[in-house]
Image (tube, rainbow, N blue to C red; front, side, top):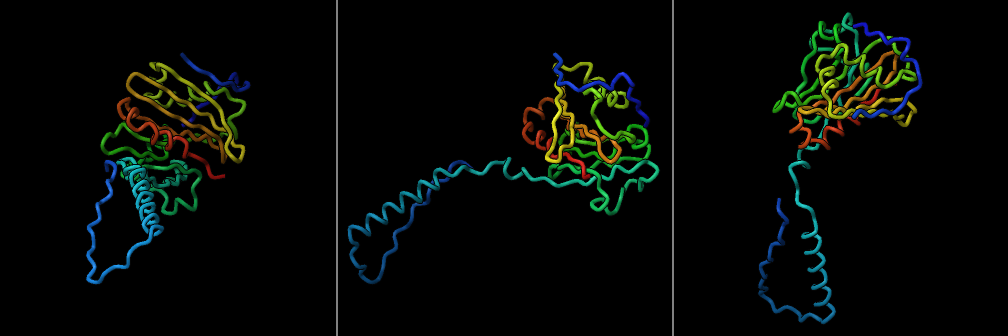
Length: 245
């Protein structure tokens, strides 16, 4: 896929904005000793009472486990961003971790959609995962070769060029209720452009950066009901994307 950024795009960047219930301590059953117990002193009784109160307080103040706690686990995906000509069929590279150019996290239980050579060659899609319970809740990555850095390409120019090869993205931008963008740098100083698109029916988070002479774009998409339910998890996926320099 050859997407060309126009020369007029080379200007300084700017931020833009378009319009198990609480557990009750189990009552201990008194244990009757066969031998007569030694009488407790006042101090022993006080210590026993204070210990019991402290134990009960810890149990009652502990938050109950939630469904989110049991499912908030992720796997790390290693992507190679290989060209269509070097792509090893549907199975991909057998040692992705060793040759990975980027990583992002995937929720446990999500399924990988195998990307064909044709799709990789036409729109640059390199990897994709989706929620089997709602296939339109997904994350994927595309890349374009031949880009050394983002700056000084404006953020809106980058997004519009990505939309040229993604009809769904183009439609979402056109019908967005709000679209915000910002730039940030990671701990290594690498520049990222982040976008958030809020539409009538869908919500998207996009992160774009350049490395290895390529432009990488990581997408997290969800229909509005799933976005409202899984927003914290989806933002975690968005923030997990990074390139391996």
